[in-house]
Image (cartoon, rainbow, N blue to C red; front, side):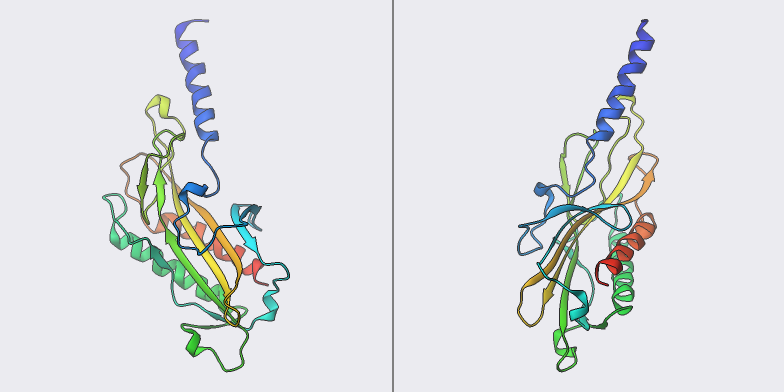
Length: 224
């Protein structure tokens, strides 16, 4: 086997190994601390075929509730915009996701912004949700940088210097029974957006809109 052939095989194998190391779910060391507890989370396949970490209280029945308290997603921890992900992008993501979540919830529940606005006698869930901190990877193997409320990049061909990059957004949510204060559902999810051409291309809210639609569609099925 000549040297170019060896190099080709080496690059191909490296690319496969690096791509295989990209996790489809949030790792424990990437949990933001937004949820009061991460105990019991297990990997599940959502109706859309994506992966997520989820815990559901035994006997939880969405039809037992008629009202959901939800105002908007939080950005947790405090956002730190970068050159690739500016504050306008973060705010647009927050607004778009919040709007889609409200529309999805409204298909099955009365949605109110505060617990005080819930109708008297209503059976109420409180939804707390946030776009949370993420990490960035230039090799698809080691997480080296924490970028709160940003997007993450992962290589598929680091050995060649060509970096097609995945955009990733992390979301955490907690559904709480308003009467008991107990969590009913906890979800931690890594949302994959569009693939970028290189490590300098700016990340925009549009890169995630289709993926967010998938998340809210999954939520609609979960809460039926």
